[in-house]
Length: 92
Image (cartoon, rainbow, N blue to C red):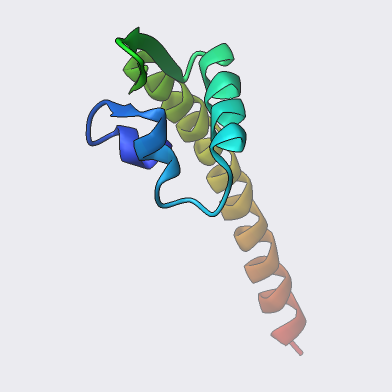
């Protein structure tokens, strides 16, 4: 659903169309994503239209980037320790 909305607004039924779940289940997912601030919905006539909240996605991207940097630093240190240990073990 999130990926679809990056292409532009869509109705709940359009979001449900490719998914193997009931329309009621899609509505529940949309409600959760709206409560989290990821989606914004509005009623247009009899149709509920969904839009992605770009600010929320930007904040999530920043959070993921920050976590990735921390893990890359940790993994680099682990690699250094393992390389050092392997070099020490090779010496007679």
